[in-house]
Amino acid sequence: MPDLSPIYLSLKLSVFTSIFLLLIGVPVAYFLSQWNSKLKFAIESVISLPIILPPTVIGFYLLVFFSPESSIGSFLENFGIQIPFTFTGILIASILSSFPFMVQPIQKSFENIPKRYWDISYTLGKSKFETLINIVIPNIKYALITGLILTFAHTMGEFGVILMIGGNIPEETKVASLAIYSDLEALNYKAAHIYSLILLCVSLTIIVLVNILNAKRK
Image (cartoon, rainbow, N blue to C red; front, side, top):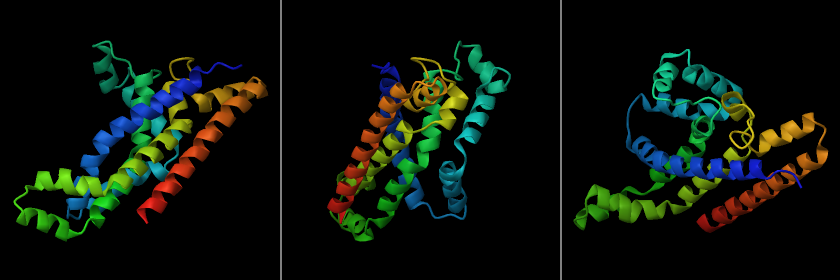
């Protein structure tokens, strides 16, 4: 039986990334859905960049940005904070690389909310915040769940960005995808098969959940 700590670490990373991105992504998505500016297209393009940008590029620049030789890295070192090759480092990398998977479906749902929902709520004496919390958010619940599922799935399968910023340190940054890579290098096909089958089952489960959500939404 192979060491299951990489599976646990992948699950931990996926859960933390999904929670942090939900807290960050909802306000960002709402702001973008309400924002009318020529800069909106540029901001949306930057948010979408991780979808097409090679993960190794993101990991490389994070490594440079947080290295002890950089001003930011040197400043953090003074407080005993190290980002590269730590769980914190791969968490930051995962949040950045999964950002569009959370923000885009939520933003789209915000934009699809009929304006009359807001108007009717205002005529009933509700504030903008009350309308957002009591009417709008419940109407985009499927988008929130979809964002969580996509973020979780993307993080579970992440490889390049984690390898660059986190290395392959057991019980610290060695997630399931890196464990498969390591076992293949060591010709340990049995362990690689087990890790792969676990990730395959997780992926199939996620696909089924997304299809169920889409069916309910329709």
